[in-house]
Length: 222
Image 1 (tube, rainbow, N blue to C red):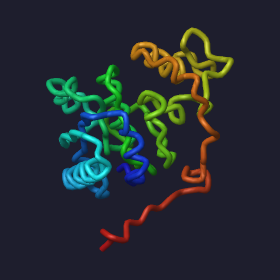
Image 2 (image 1 turned 90 degrees about the vertical axis):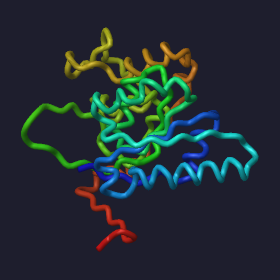
Image 3 (image 1 turned 30 degrees about the vertical axis):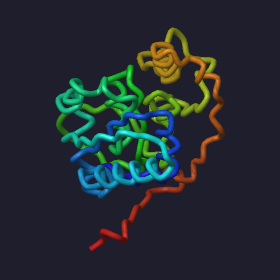
């Protein structure tokens, strides 16, 4: 189970400011259960964005779609016929879903609309690869949909470190260096100049460093 909160609305508006045609996608799994990213929340956020942009006199087209799961190839491929029609995708799935959509469509800008807080685990049946640590302050919009917190062994926010070699991590040399992946994606998208933007020191107060966390939604609590 993954628990998330929607990002502040002004942050979302600033994030999507450069884009006129936006595909807003939700997920029918964990974020629906915690009332953050299901069909109802997609419709509400889309309406809020349209009203805000219209009030500001800025044209915008926001289309809505909710996938069964954003972290599953079968459902992610459902976007293939339409994704080229949009300037950007705004996902209100968890950090795993955002990254998987970005991996499936690396040429497309995929933006996070939620801050993933923490995740439960499945202890049997299958193998999973970590993509998100639920740091509570998602930076995927600045790192091309590749999480440096979860995928860099040192969680470096301005990488790579001096130890990576040949695109691989120095600590576990079969693991791709997260920052090498970020740089390669920036190159492929013709956005390498963004690599020069220095990320500010990260606020880790929303992470789990203070121990196990609990999130209570009083508005839906029974």
